[in-house]
Structure formats: C-alpha cells, structure tokens
Figure (cartoon, rainbow, N blue to C red):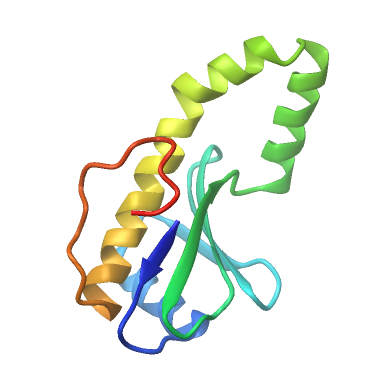
Length: 125
C-alpha cells in the first residue's frame, strides 16, 4: 500500500514516533531501509525505503522464522489448505495492523483523508 505524505520523513524519526504512539508494538530495523512493526508472532507490517512523496507499507510475517514455518506448511499440506487458513486467520490481523500504521502516518505526515474501510486485496488506499 502506498500512503501519500506531504512532509518529508526518515525511518529513524518514524521509528521513534511509532514507539511513542504504539508502545504495545515491537518496532525494529531489518537492514538500513526496512522498518518492521510486529504485534505478536503473526501480525506484522514492513515499511520499505524512504521516498519523497509516499510511504510504502506492506503486511508480512514479523520474523523470518514465522515466514519459514508458513512456507514449510505450504509444501507439506499442498497449497490449498494452508492458504485458506492463512486468508481467514492470519491475513486479517496483518491488514488491520497495516491500516492502523497507515492511518497514523497519514495523521502525522499527510493531509489526506483517512480511509477506514479497506478491502483485503486493496493495493492502493
């Protein structure tokens, strides 16, 4: 998802603001250009890169171990069963976290409207 911003930002500045606004989330850098926000072991969001006019936010597994377990389950139980479980149990939690972070970024750095109703398959909100 791309969130349009009016003011410039840095990931370090964004990290400190997110830590004060959301103390219940764990926020850490994954490399120099990626910021991971996690809520438990399943729900995670990644902010990739520092762009001038937008912030790119994607839902993801917060740990590489969680991603590896999901990939192994996909291989062991064919693709259909793990994907159905993923789409009904894990994906909504990840999207909810992504939307919460996107709304915060819109309030802090942008002047655009906050879109509270998003579909699971929306790329641009």
